[in-house]
Image 1 (spheres, rainbow, N blue to C red):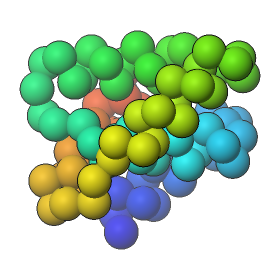
Image 2: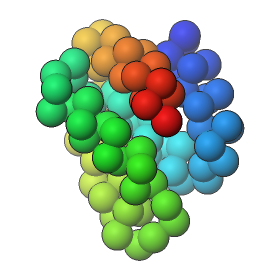
Image 3: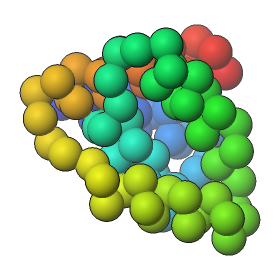
Length: 86
């Protein structure tokens, strides 16, 4: 739940919409702690504006998310990194 609180604060601070919140929350879930995923996380964060292309990308990534312990750990760590990079 620390992950959930951290990401919730992150979302509120950056004024994302409900749809973006749902998509981004799941993007963090399916991320792993590798350099490639950190780069992807950083890029997804910076292109999370309200455009059709970004909504489509978020929607597709949302469906490939899995709720595993590893993903929760990645969510927590990547959300911290994303906050520091912002």
